[in-house]
Image (cartoon, rainbow, N blue to C red; front, top):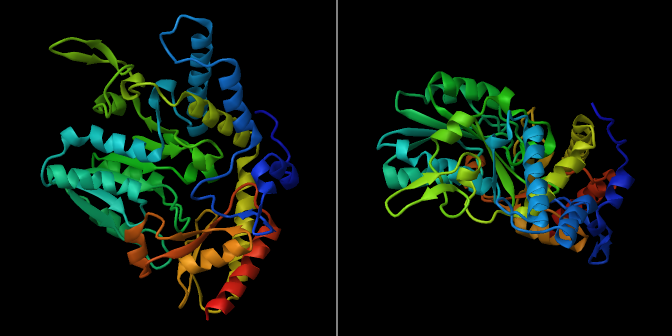
Length: 409
């Protein structure tokens, strides 16, 4: 095992030039990491360096730069294999993000769905893990069944077990909620799904950022992740699929690269992973995501998680002192995401006031309307913590929310 870097918050922050910026005359306190994280210099340099020194389209090129770019692109795929604990590089499909990855699975399974077949999802899902399944409901008559949540935001696992029937075909679950930070017991849920011969899909968009993921241990048939929340670029993500599941899946996009032969009366597909990577891929972005994986892997992930959770606990303790504060989602097993409301104050107003103090949070329904309805709210304010955030930023958040509460009373 390679030596891990010492966790030095000042050194870490020095690698993010954007953190030197001021907003409204105040140092930026960027607490919107669940939406998208900032990028370290290592990622920006890897992308710029590739474009400056060796760029060409990948695969099938016979010249030097095509071969060099292909090597860098496929090296990024190998990094995702290691990062997710997959078995082989052919099980990793590059996508534009987790949204495309989940749509790819839903589309690829369409041919197996008949009217009345059931798909189980949970109330904790992001819209990207809801809408693709609604497509199967609209177009093929599938029935969507919902796993409810308990008061603290954890899933009702007894209800989950009761939803299965002989018509249940697919279970799709978020690993970690982008609203509450709740970490769902995906390993146990997957075991139950497989006992009922269901395809088990996991949205790992948030989870892959905050703690180590082992897709073989989870036993997911498919696992989606994205790059831009992982300190990497936008426009890139990955879908892990078991080899036998990817062979079973129908292609999502058609075009160059994903075919073996094209005739007037028929086509044959390329082998996985290329079967699912039609057209010119996001080459530079994939290399950037690989650099982000290299960067975050330099640290002890448990130490990073402990740092983020310490910030969460500090924020929660301070915000509990604010009049009419309500936390949304207080599950015992969760990541560093804090959603809250202030009675009588709209989340958008809270976010705008905090911005005056240089504090960036997210406000709204966070693409999770069914979860909002479960909690009886239309929106929340959300602070989400990353590797570069500090205790001082948390204290500024608490002070600014106090001021917002006073102003909005």
